[in-house]
Length: 277
Image 1 (tube, rainbow, N blue to C red):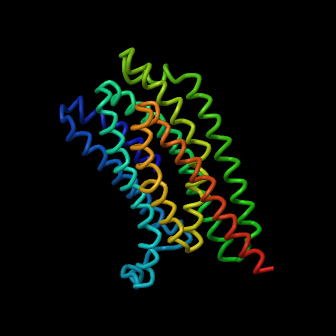
Image 2 (cartoon, one colour):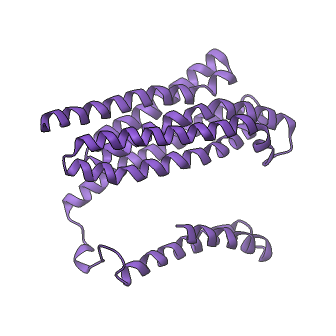
Image 3 (cartoon, rainbow, N blue to C red):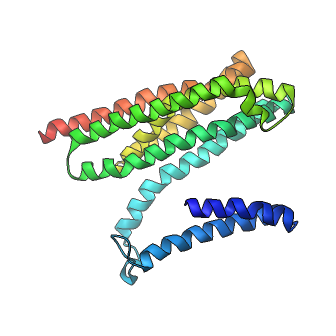
């Protein structure tokens, strides 16, 4: 993964500026980076450096395997689609406040995404551990992993929040020299950054349900989070409080979803632990 990303970063300026290929060069660099990453991954399999090795008999999956893949993949895909839909609604509302406001929100969201990558990585890291212990019916250890994961993610994200709170104007100024964009972007970043300690726990809960073979709960969390809470709150708070209300929609959504999703997951695991005792 690192090699593919580095290759992409190196080739981007070469293709875009040195070879004057513009956006086409950026696309080629992205493809080359991904192709390199895939090739490196295949080398490990070909050299039999992995626990499992590819075989022709695994090329055609069974209906049961396809069902499991779709059950796990659909909630994740739906979350991406609904997130895109929410951004469209968000941007359409922001347009009424001027182009500079849209630019400020865009920059703030990009900076926030760095913090999002942190919780996504930790959540993905806990998923196999939760799945292994669920299969072994070691529910006590699952609860320990859940608690430890939430503490680590929340603690890390609190540190990121502190950096954003202190250096918000400086971070925004890396992308623009407009005083209005910097001022508005800093205010937006200092508000939406409040999601970080909460959204990680929600993501961990969703991935844990997938690891436990309960994708319907992950699906419900995704549906409620984006479609039932966030988008309606965007519209409602924008009508009631204008731009300042609109940017509070995301933190409020994540606080509610963190409480609901972790309570649901903790209740289910505790019940299974009790039944297994």
